Image (cartoon, rainbow, N blue to C red):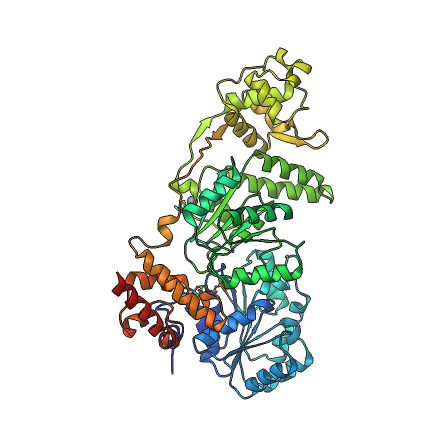
Amino acid sequence: MTSPQDILQTIFGYPSFRPPQDEIIQTLVDGGDALVLMPTGGGKSLCYQIPALLRTGCGIVISPLIALMKDQVDALRQVGVRASYLNSSLDANMAKRVEEALLAGELDLLYIAPERLNQERTLSLLQRAPIALFAIDEAHCVSQWGHDFRADYLKLSVLHQYFPKIPRIALTATADARTRNEIIHRLDLAKARQFIAGFDRPNIRYRIALKHNAKQQLLRFLKDEHATDAGIIYCLSRKKTEEIAYWLQGQGFHALPYHAGLDAEIRADHQSRFLREESVIVVATIAFGMGIDKPDVRFVVHLDLPKTIESYYQETGRAGRDGEHANAWMVYGLQDVIKLRQMMDNSEGGEEHKRAEQHRLNAMLGLCEITSCRRQVLLNYFGDTLSDPCGNCDNCLEPVNTWDGTEAARMALSAAYRTGQRFGVNHLIDVLLGIETDKIAQCHHHQLPTYGIGKALDNNQWRSVFRQLVARGYLSVDLERFGALRLEEKCRPLLRAEEQIELRRDIKQKVATRLTKTFLPEDIDVALWEVLRECRRELAGEQGIPPYIIFHDRTLQEMCVAVPQTMEEFGELGGVGERKLEKYGPAFLQAINEHLASC
Ligand code: ADP
Ligand code: ZN
C-alpha cells in the first residue's frame, strides 16, 4: 500500500509536506470530513488530490472557476494523474466520454462546475460511479455576505444527503469567522475537523512609498527589480490603465490594459496572454483578478490607494502564489488621501454605512502611515497576531524615523483655522511659507499671524505634515469647497498643548528594500537561468500550455544551483516527480550540457 509521502515524492516530486497538509490528508484517507482555511499559495490542492489518489474511486472537485479547470487538469495530467473536467465548455460528445471514463473507474480526479453538479442527471451519474471524496473549492462562495456568492453553492448541501458515507473537504482562503460559520452551517460540516492556517503570506514584501513622480518611480521599480517578470498594476480609473499600459509599452515593457470597458474579446485575449506568456504586465482596474490563478506573478503594484485593507490584501495576495519572493509595492500621497476622503463623503448609503466606510478607510490610511511593521498591522486587522516584526516589509527593512511634529502641526492647523477653513493645501502652504501670490494679496492673508511662520520647513515637508494630519483625522476635506481643509474635533488637545504628535519622516529612495538579489539565489549563473527559461518556453509552446505547468520557477532555480548532469540528479529536484523526470529530464539536461560546453 502506498503512503501519502510516497505519492508526494514520486508523483509531485516534493520531499515533504507543509503542515498541516499531512494531517488533512490523513483525515480524508480515514474517511473523515475537513474544513480547510489556508492562505493562497499554502498548498490546498494536494490536500484533496493525494487522498483522491489513495482512496478507491474518483475525487470530485467542485470549483466555480471554469476558466481555470483546463489548466488544473493539464497540470495534473503532466504528472500522470488521470484528471478531467465537466463544464459548459465541453460539447455533448466530449462530456459523454468523460462520463464513461468516470463510470469505468478510469479517472482519479474530476472537476465539476457547481451548476453542473446540481443537475439531477449529474447526481444520478455520480451515484453510479465509484467516488473517493468531494472537494468543495472556494467554499466561501456559499456566503451571501461575501463578494463571490454563488447561488449554486447553497445547493451543495445535497452532497451530504445523497452521499452520507463519502468524505468531504471544503477549502477557502477567506477566513473570517462569519464566513467560516456559514460554510459549516450551509454545507452541513458541523462534524468536520477544522484546519485553520494563518493569514500570513510571508513571501510577499509589503512596501508603501511616498508618491512624488509616480511614473518615474514605477519605471525605476520595474527596471531595478522586475525587468522580465509578470505582474499586475492596479489603477483606479479605466483611462489611467490605458495611459500607463501604453506608456510602459513605449518604455519596452510588455504591458496590456484591462478594464470592464474593453471589448470582451480584448479582455479575454489580454488575460490569456498574461497566463500563457511570460513577462506580461497587466495594468488593470479591480475588474481584473477573480480567477487569476497564475502562480508566478512576481509583483502587484498599486498606483492609487485602495479603499480598504480587505481589497489591498486581496489584490496584493495575487502575487507569489508559488511561495517565491514577490513584491507588493504601492505609492501614495496627499492627493490620494484627499480624493478618497471626498469619495467617501460622496458615497450613497445611510449614515451607518458611511461610518463603516470611513472606519475602513482610516484603517487603510493607518497602514500607509504606520512606522512599525506593516505585516503586524495587516494580520492584526484580520484578527491574527504576529509576535515579532516580520523583517520583510519596508518599515522592518529600513526603519522609519519620526520627528516631533507638534509645533508644525499646530502651525498647519492654525493656518487652516485663520483662513476660515476655506482653502486647500496649496494655499495654506503658501501662507505658511510667506509666499506672495495673487490669492494671498486678494484675501489679505499676508496680514495673518501665521503668514511666513513656517519657513523652517520646505514645501514637501509641509505636504507631508498636511497628509499625515488628514490621514490621521485631524483635518477633514470639505466637499462643497473643493479640497478645503477643516479642523476636526480631534485637534483640540493638540491645539491646547495637551497632546504631542510624532510624525513620519518621509524618505525618498528605499534602497534596502529592493528585491533584486533575493529572488534569484546569489551567485547563480544568470545565463543558465535564461537558457532554462527558454527551454521551458519551447516545451510549453509545443503543448499549448503555460510555462509554469512544465516547471515552476522554483524548480528552475534549483537547476541553476544544483546544475544536475544525470537523470538521477535531475530527479532530486523539487517539483520533479517520476513522470516529469522521464518527460522533461532529457531536454533540460541537454540544455544544461550545451550551456556548460559553451562557457
Ligand atoms: P492554494 O490552492 O492553497 O493557493 P496550491 O495548491 O496551488 O495553493 O499550491 C501552491 C504551490 O505550492 C504550488 O506550486 C504547489 O505545487 C506548491 N506546494 C504545495 N504543497 C507543497 C509541498 N508540500 N512542498 C512543496 N511545494 C508544495
Ligand atoms: Zn515587517
